[in-house]
Image 1 (cartoon, rainbow, N blue to C red):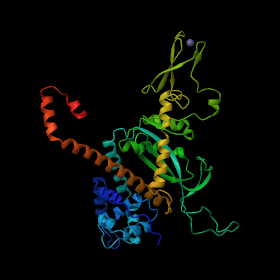
Image 2: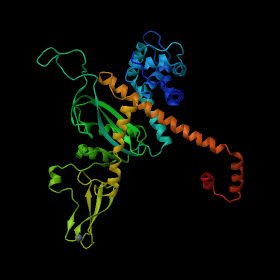
Image 3: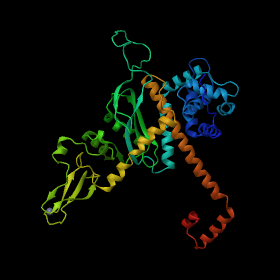
Image 4: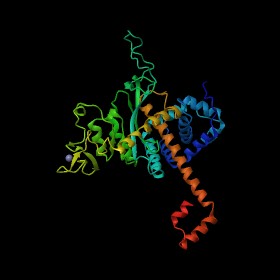
Length: 408
Ligand SMILES: [Zn+2]
């Protein structure tokens, strides 16, 4: 059997153990335990959740490979609580089905992990980058068994997948692909996803921005800005962002009104008018005559695609838009380091579950690392009680302010 060559790293085993002990994953386990196993009694839910986490931590494409890995390594079996009797791949497939039937529990777990990250990392989710990335199906997209045949094939097919177009990236040419697309909103400060959804490839990417922003909001991430590429530069996206108090950072597409110059700032005999601030409540930007000799010397322009609240010529736009690369980087990491690619499941609900579990594992790892860091720093603070006592006495006397204690 094709067993992964690399033995599980002790660090990864410890990581899975930490994940299984985190309150969010424990709640997921408890919720799944409440739902009855409808078929034969299986392995403990905790073991199976651990298998699902291991699948992403070790970036394994199939349950068969996870089962093989766990079967070979007693350390993993001990952490998963199945020492000596690792689960079969059939148990893993039944569990995946159970997870699909209990999508709300998985969704609640994701919400809780995102909320936990938001509590630890206040900047998480404030500035988002939104984009879509291709996920080729585990199928070849050919409908008939051969070129001139009228017999429809019934293998290597995926009824939910469809043909979509992807743009050229670096040395890869653009072109058609068969499968799905992952639409994601990624935080540009932490590079962590906040909201995502998987859709069939032919569905137009601009249809999902509003849902991503709503999901981010539900999870407690109030997006202040969203950076999107030129493909999203349509009035509806600008409106959807503005309605959600999120300022869009989208480069201008060369549409007929742009060619007519309607996006340009006002001009007068004194020159091109300069940007003088935006008023969110009014939903407009203010522009001023460069010399102030005109009457009136300033004017308001209602915000729209051609005149966004963060004008495209400002530094804020340029700096913010540059951070859009965060979403591209994250797609790459999810695909290569977390096993999002290659797809080895068919059908939209299975591809969605695979994606949810992959991103959930990544976010849960980030959360447990953040928690470990903050508890480590509180331990190191507490390990010097003598010094702390002296400082407290000194501060009581008014020599040292509380802030400088923290700085020491
Ligand atoms: Zn003027």
